Image 1 (tube, rainbow, N blue to C red):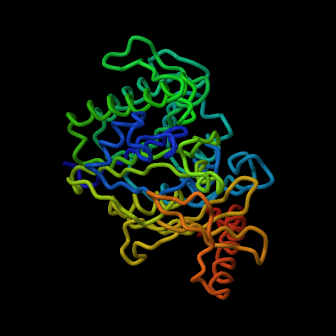
Image 2 (cartoon, rainbow, N blue to C red):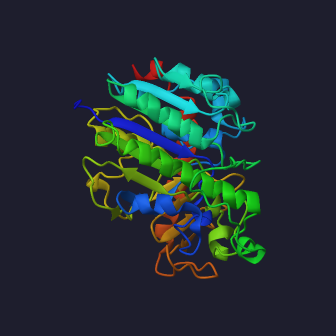
Length: 391
């Protein structure tokens, strides 16, 4: 067995917690992911650091919350393309970026080729499977072909796989073996904010990951591979079943499940209460893989006990002030001098937002300074984290 573990990071399109079986037990949209979480490290208090897929991919790769206000996202900003990354420091690894469609979208190709030397971009035109819609091959075919490639690899590999099937037009292949095409009644769909094709599409994405793990678990590379599964971001459309205050803070647009499945090291499931976000992924993965790395941006190892369990995630919200989120609180800076803490209980969120009366004004001022400071340093790093600056 090779000494270094492989890494497979699956970034699932719009895999929002509030549309999943993780938030609602009677919602069967992500039953396999929930089952997988029970034998993995599962982070229920995890958030996309910024909204939209391009911003999410950029935040994951660079460790910078993409709050770009001049362009739709930093991959489209020519001044923010050159970045020093942790991924670049995975020496000896064969590196892959895989997606069913075209990597020219949002200039993702530019971010990858400019910052990850030798990366192999596998995209539309490479896959043998037929295109299913505008987003290229289906998630199922993408993951199956990725598995076939992994089986042939001898050197350690790091693959970032970007899925797309849970995106309009929500195309679900017909005639899938063991896939239940049954739709619940309209009132049930409306309760959780689904239209029929959307509901089936999310279940199909879960099915695709299930089939991938069915194949992978019987392959030699499985035991020595770190699998990370998360969503790129949440969904703007609200679910009537989700608490009003949860939606009022737009948390439904950012909260996504995070699962770390590492058979060789973690054989039993464990719920990890600490808050975190996309900027923390690469420091966490590098530490798990035993990679010595230099971190020049904001992410931190989620498993480092130095930081404790009562950590904060930082989210750059679209058209709103950024927020800090812990496992049971949410701090919103709002307008200067009017920031407030709100209870954010994971299992039971009250209908009305309530300021935490136990906090002094000095404490509120400290968190306001922290939030605005993280916002400003995120903007600074977009243009001051280039490879030449780090030499």
